[in-house]
Image 1: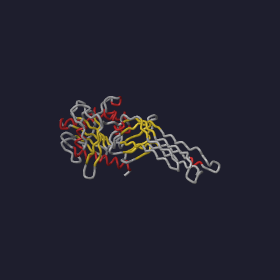
Image 2: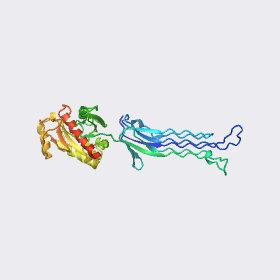
Image 3: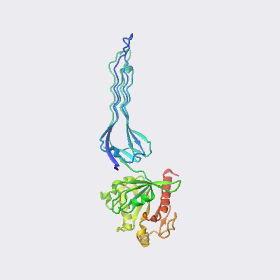
Image 4: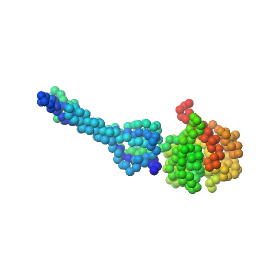
Length: 354
């Protein structure tokens, strides 16, 4: 089951109490205080784990607690520290305060560990309170209480390219043709109900991650359809690929403009992200429909690049491209891979300042 958002109450462990004890051994009738300290309460730690892909393992859990520290004992024995509570989350997880909405931490790298709540300190045993004026201290510190917090864990998939399109535009077919992802494919709308990730291998040295989210329809920003619910999964993507269905009853220009409008309503930053356009199902329509798309956008086609077919008009520049493809008939898929790889590489270089 794909679960990408969950609310939990977490609590760190209470510190163990210090011990009140006095040394009593043969021939040492007044050995003095020897009460040990209590152990520290367990921390609440969030760990990023590549082997975890959803938040389903938290389903049905409301309160998660770290273990309490053990009390100290006589002979200055220190109580055992409480066991930490480790919350394993997928890469791309965001931890928020459920009450204020404040982002507390984000985890993106495998093995990354961050302490969300520290456990309570253990109390000091009576051994610490001995002195010339108080040689028989009969008190010790109680352990410090643990901390409690209501949190929301939200998953945002980490991908380089995010596919955006209307339902049944062929996004699932495209990601399955380009990558190792195996989404459900059928001839009806909203086949994709949850986001999918796939690794696209370009050549021996290059690859990128592609994300497919459920289709977006007009009015998604008002709650229609499914796509807007999952748009957060492409917030981290470096490039948006608009997949336009040429064989649809919806006009291709209408599809493109509507998708842009809904994206802008959701996030101005996401709307301004680098993008490209794939005109899908070109094998099912006349080439005139591709030419009409260019004319309506007032774009002059350029020479094909990356081995793209000369049969269909296309457009390439340094920032974007428009490429007619067919995911089912595998037309121009290699050219699409290379063109996307270059856009992703450019975006990464700009991010790192290279």
